[in-house]
Image (tube, rainbow, N blue to C red; front, side, top):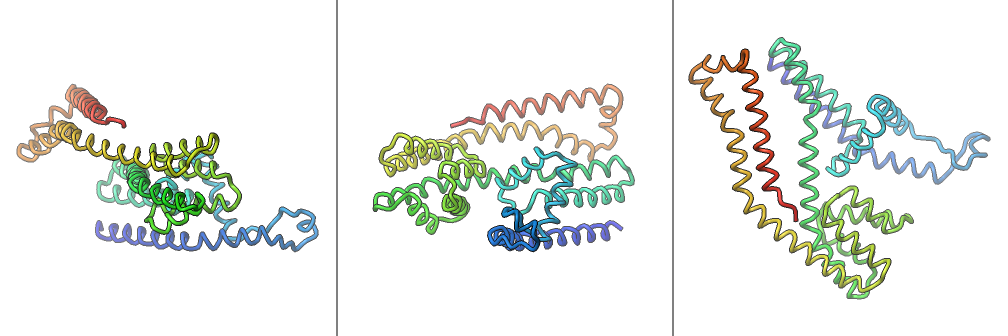
Amino acid sequence: MIWAELIVLLVAIIFLALYFSKQEADSDKVALRERLAFLSKTQESKQDRDNPFSTKIPQELKKKEDTRRFLVYLTGEAMMMRLEKQLTQADIPIRASEFILMRVVLAGVGGALGLSMSNQWIVAGGVGLLMFFIHVPYIAFMKAARINKFTNQLADFLSLICNSLRAGQTFLQGVDLACRESPAPISTEFRQLMRETNLGLPIEESFQNMYIRVPGEDLKIVLSAFSIQRQVGGNLAEILDQVSKTIRERIKIQGQIKVLSTQGKMSGAVVGLMPLALVVIISVVSPGYMDPLLTGYGKVMVGATLFWQGLGCFAIYKICDIEV
């Protein structure tokens, strides 16, 4: 029975992966059809001809918009926008509505597996909630990894732009050349900046949009330096060169701090996990020895222990978390 349910779970995951990969492949085509329909302004009725801003929405877009409206009605616009922002920052190429539906399916499958394996609704609900919120650490990890990778590429990218500016090219020409020589994600983000600028958006706003997608402190320094240069004037090549040197120094110092604080973080992890490891070992070696801690005042003692253990680990982590 368990193997059959695992097979069903695997099939569901494969189906969801194929579905969302198809949605990702079709999203560019759908967006292109939407833009072409808006620009062509082909109207089929007199009412449409009288309104130059009306356009027929493709059926695929209408279905996705209806799904989004329904989910916004259930979750709220603020939560949907926050989820869309998180998916963009983590570079997960699916829509927020599709992501929520995927979480609901995984929660349902996980709850069914928990119920079948334990035959208890509490366990099933716990497994379902775990599957529903399992995206939180995943998105945080993907976001941090992407920002870190972007930051490590930023100094070299600015150096390429400085060389182009010294050769007599404009800033956007230098960005275009640097994008050709640089890998993702920095090339992807700056190409997006170029597209927005070519469509008429001010370059300062394009930088602000990039900062929303990649909220790193080093990019904030670049944005501030570029904005000040646009307002006050000066040699942009020299300014960006100094900013790239500053970013390299920040990365170097952060690496040194990470090495020096690793021992403290490992100590916190060992101190936090040692009691749990002892509980598991004692329960295996001598079953029933820990039963008094699960009844009466034992539960209070366990709760107080977990609280102070968590507080101690948090304090160690905050002490070792040094900002540059």
